[in-house]
Image 1 (cartoon, rainbow, N blue to C red):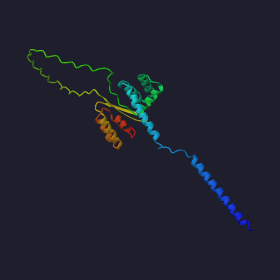
Image 2: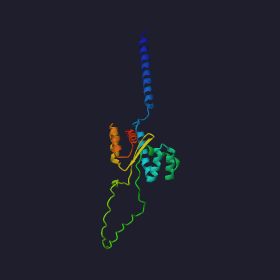
Image 3: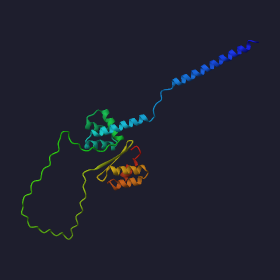
Image 4: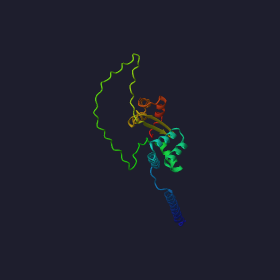
Length: 228
């Protein structure tokens, strides 16, 4: 009987050691199976978006104003094949490059590029006006009297040579409004009003500064989202 107590103590010690070894082994395997910490989940998506935005700017810079309008005309008509063909015809790039470029242009609409001077070309020198010749004034003829039933002439309308293109896209849907009364400041106000929830006010401001119909203005404002 005097050997039973020490034997029981030894058995208990062995069991405790075995349990401790098993617990430590599980912890070691769990720590080794964990991979290295990674950055925020959205970091890769933000980098891809910035790359696509930069690609859209580079693709737009390779186009003349006429080629730019041709490509965006295909995009507005939801004709991606036509957009790729127009871009390849304008730049001579490969099919893959044209597809990537038109996809970026659709996601991030770019303004029409301004005409650029040809490298090495110098502007023509201004022509000096010729000296006026001495002339003998002729007697002024009386102006003819207007006909009694003649209608008054309509006032001349101001003519502007620049037509601003406002383009908005959301997903695959693209809307465009062109007007001589639009500019970047007005479009920015329209977007700000729409994003603040006042879409009726944004539509009214767009109608007041363009020739767009009410349906066109409503469709343009409807596509304004925070990411647009």
